[in-house]
Every structure is written in C-alpha cells, then in structure tokens.
Length: 141
Ligand code: T46
Image (tube, rainbow, N blue to C red; front, side):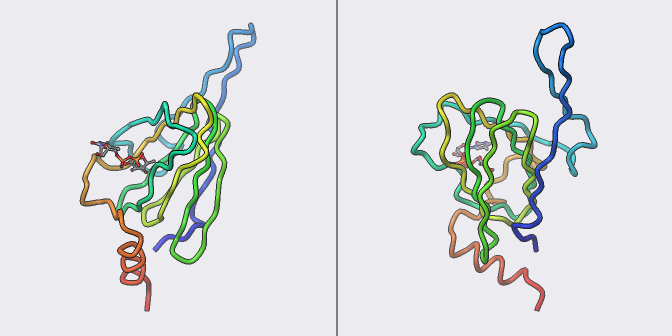
C-alpha cells in the first residue's frame, strides 16, 4: 500500500518560443506512469474551499496547476505532506490509496487532473474512518 513518499513531482517539458510568443508544455504518453482515461479540471474555486477529501482505491492521478496555485495535502493514514503547486510545467503524480485534500486556491487557479480510470463512485473512499480501515486491511501483516 502506498505512503506519502510515493508521490512524485514531475517536470513537464517546456518549449520556450525563441521569438517571444510565450511557452508551450507538452505531456507525451511516457511522462506519467499510466494510461490516461479521463481528464477534468477545477476552476472558480473560492479560496476557502477544500476540494478532494477522499482517497481512491485504484485511481492514479496527475495534477497540474494550469494557472495560479493551490496546496495538495496527502495523507497515508500515518503521515501527511503538503505540496504547493504553482508552476504549469510541474505536476504532481499521486498513486492510489492516499487521502488528498486540495486547499488555498489562489484567485484564478485552474487544476487540471489526468486520471487512470473512468469515473466510478465505487472507487472513492469519502469517509476518513473507512480510509483508515482500508489502509489497515491492505497493509502487510
Ligand atoms: C480528486 C479531486 C482532485 C463526475 O460526475 N464525474 C467526474 O469525473 C468527477 C471528477 C466528478 N463527478 C461528480 C461527482 C460529484 O457529484 O462531480 C461532483 C463533484 O465531485 P467531487 O466532490 O469528487 O469533486 P472534488 O473536487 O472534491 O474531487 C475531484 C475528483 O472527484 C477527485 O478524484 O482527486 O477532484
């Protein structure tokens, strides 16, 4: 079962136009360790809102701050880590089995999420007590 140490910040290749037309970043198929099955994005999030607040049994995801910034708090049941995402060329890979909360959204922040599964409510653990039970039942004895 994954721990918070299994998250990864991944650099997304950036192509800077040499004629001043700005930047372009590209995600090709081998950059993240799974096949993308779904894409969604969060935007117009009030700064005092918390998104997430759940874990996924199977789903892996890659979060990119397309615009602005926000914090991602990862929790494996024993430890927590907070990662600030604020560069559109640096994304966060989150393996399955970690509790996550997204908070401190800046004005205009946009969070792009590339995920490994189609939408299935049965993949969510939305109650923290159930998450702890899930971790306990999936830990090596
Ligand atoms: C995650 C964080 C970062 C759908 O119908 N289809 C979808 O693909 C998604 C993602 C959500 N929904 C429905 C389910 C809920 O009725 O949209 C509503 C809001 O979803 P939720 O409360 O799960 O939203 P967040 O922002 O708390 O969580 C989402 C993702 O669900 C989750 O996987 O990691 O963004």
